[in-house]
Length: 292
Image 1 (cartoon, rainbow, N blue to C red):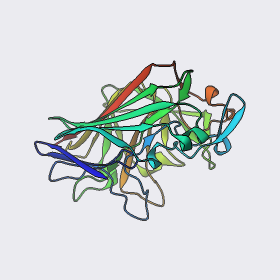
Image 2 (image 1 turned 30 degrees about the horizontal axis):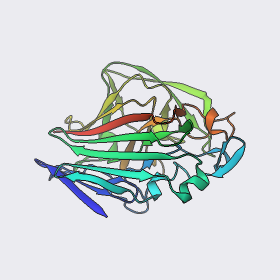
Image 3 (image 1 turned 60 degrees about the vertical axis):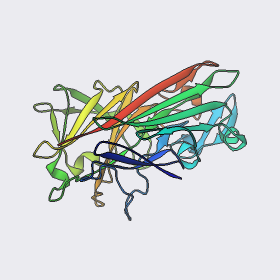
Image 4 (image 1 turned 90 degrees about the vertical axis):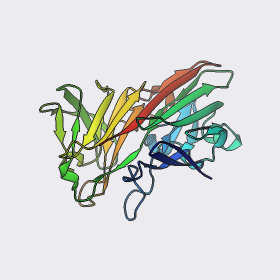
């Protein structure tokens, strides 16, 4: 089911299958990647209960093994609509017999989309409905059209931060194993990082402990978006680099991440994994705010 919300010039479409934002527009510009072949075939999946790939495709809980797809199962499940208004929709995924076969915890996963005067906010809430502690990763993966505006090229854009950080990033090998020892520094000039395809070879830019909570994605005329996030530890930036030259860029706030060199399949031991006591909840969010 496709649900539409709007406010002022902004409008959005959300697919209840996966609670995925599939469109966000100001009437002139489409900001969300539209799944054009032969490139990435998703728009903005919700990553739960793991982020990235699990060790050998499984997680281990209390000595038992469970098959787990890349980025978890939430993006492949139908969410119910809890409430809806003109500019907001709240969706819910609950555990069921199928989820318990690959993730032996009971939960409620709420995803709330709200359009305000600035843009669109995605808020994610995990509630532990089990009688024991649960462990999980959570993340966002929105794809932004790049270029955004007619006449632009990918390399016309830059990222702008709130200060001149020296960002410490890592990457992964050809088998998508994250390599902690691959750490390198990204130096900003005047708070900016010019975008080049080569930055994404062999894969995403992964920042384990993000010192920032927002960044801007701008062209030479300083038009684009501001991306804000709250209550996430890590941050990744990704596109299909070369030779694909994909026309999108993903901004990915994460808690936990994919398989890392030296890790086992134990979900409790995954980098950045979250734990939640029975009856407790965890909330995180991110926003896409156009700049023109």
